[in-house]
Amino acid sequence: MAEIEFTIVAATGEFLMHVHGVAGPACDEVARLVKELAGEPGQEEATAEYHLRPRVNMRNTNRVQPRGR
Image: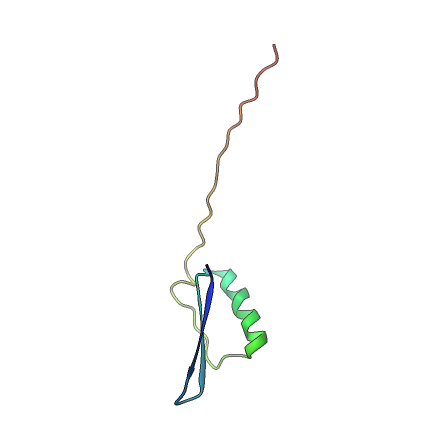
């Protein structure tokens, strides 16, 4: 489940955003939408979670068709 965490550092007024639960290019799309709403960040960095590859469960289903008699 994707979550977006926002933090405002009271001492500096710095606005931080961290996207959790979204790996790779899908995270870029979430970040883009948030930037449209909140504005461009002063600094941006990719976390280790960003570099994870999403898991895709492949199913190999072999269906056998009965031969006509």
